[in-house]
Amino acid sequence: EAQVTQNPRYLITVTGKKLTVTCSQNMNHEYMSWYRQDPGLGLRQIYYSMNVEVTDKGDVPEGYKVSRKEKRNFPLILESPSPNQTSLYFCASSLGVMGYGYTFGSGTRLTVV
Amino acid sequence: DQQVKQNSPSLSVQEGRISILNCDYTNSMFDYFLWYKKYPAEGPTFLISISSIKDKNEDGRFTVFLNKSAKHLSLHIVPSQPGDSAVYFCAAGGGADGLTFGKGTHLIIQP
Image 1: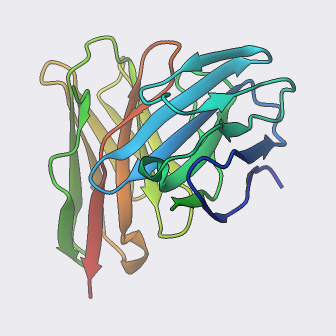
Image 2: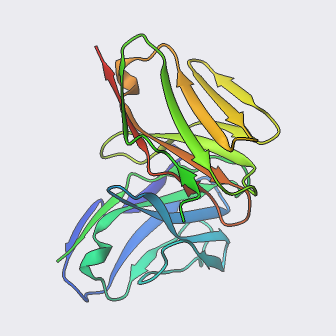
């Protein structure tokens, strides 16, 4: 089944404790992206990657890192999480960036206390 | 600055009637537009798209209209069904930096 898999689905952590949210897709998509969804703010792009070893900042990259060492994986890293990073996170992938619909993962609900 | 705007946070429509969701954009470089549907506890799912060379695209009960001069697009759902109750996101793209999403409209279909 073609899908984007995120782990974990739910995570509660403490301020300053490094964490990684994994994202994997099995569709051989070149384009991958991370979004966060917050009440009243919709979906905002954190980082995106057009291919292996190519990553770029989105609209809200502060406090996040990503890497794209393999085509299928695009982990989101929070080196020192803070409470304002409490959010619902979605990973998405696409064949390309122009005009193709994204396939989204099921989301990761992160709470930083 | 919000480049994609959905000005109605929620919309209530009676089952069987037409639902019309609206979206405005400010960036003239956008050349393709998409609508996504999201249920609680799930990721958004792609619904329908339209490129800037067209003014209408239809897929079953869903039709998207694009008015480039007004920088406005709309999603029509007819007839509306209970399963259509969800949050709908409008998205736009035109460059290498992916999609820009609106804040979403919560559509409620009343029996």
